[in-house]
Image (cartoon, rainbow, N blue to C red; front, side, top):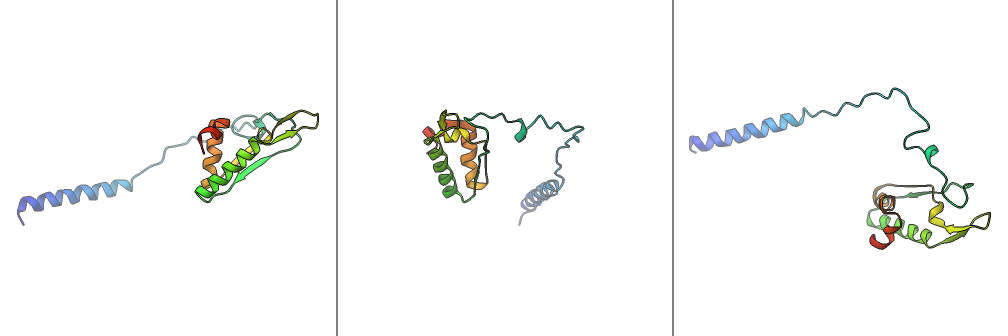
Length: 128
């Protein structure tokens, strides 16, 4: 082996070693402590306003995981709710999906929940 090739290989190994060592020096950003919490602000259930035909019920959708099968199932649930008309206690009508207060999901189900949160009814035109 020629000395120049050995020197090149040694310098490459040194660069790789330095990069490996630097990955152990990773830091996280500093988050300042919260001085005061306000129960009337932020992403809390209490800050949501009723928007359906009746606010005596709380409807929560929780979509499970399972990859594409879970995403397809949760899409079917949302589509069914969008196509289902309900009658309120005062005789007013609306779609069942408009009565949903909270949607949550994990893994595959969270993709559909996210898409509905971002696109709303446009989801049914583009997602399938």
